[in-house]
Amino acid sequence: MTVFDLLFIALFLIAAGTLVTAFVLFFRGRRTRALTALGKLAICTAGYITFVYAATALSKPPVLRVGDPACDDDWCIAVAAVRRTPMNAVTRLDVDFRIFSRARRVAQRELAAKDVYIVDADWKRYNPIPSGTEIPLNTLLQAGESKSTGRRFEVPYGAHGLGLMVERGAFPFCVIIGECEAFHKGVVIRLETDDNPGLNKGPGPQERSGTAPGSRLNWNP
Image 1 (cartoon, rainbow, N blue to C red):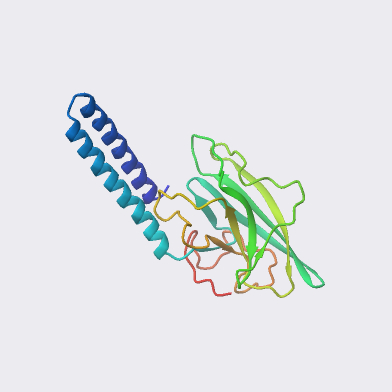
Image 2 (cartoon, rainbow, N blue to C red):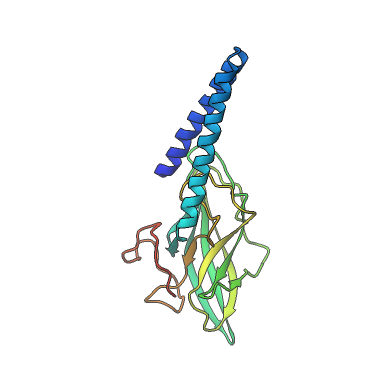
């Protein structure tokens, strides 16, 4: 849980308290004070939401590496390994990853997550090849639960700058600073490394050099 999560929780509790106070004042006949409180709450809420989207519009999409978790609230996805198989004009990529929950008490699912796909340096998209045995990203996860799965892709031989992304639903409604993808393409998990552009098995979490989980990198394939 980040400081922005805590900020949202604090503001949510303050807003709930303000609503309760406004309703009490209204039913006690103090309608002017109640409407004033609701008006201030509406202005503050609009200001906060505006700030959330403005921060998104001015930010750059984070680029992660193999092993780094990409999280939305308490739902996370992390690539474990990438295997490359040359096949004439195309290259087969088998991407192993896990989805897991950071929640400590409640079960949850990421309803907006449809599937993953790969993009190259030109942002050309490559969808996974379905096998019928994949675990959906919106699978219900118990508190602290982790599930391992994978996807298979075929990309043109020589494609570079490959990254994995999560496909989501409609335009996101964002309430937490720093966890919104409304105005950029979203989080990219880079599948290639500077010392291993051939996409053999990616480095694990302890093998990354100088990259802290969640750090923002300049993605220059």
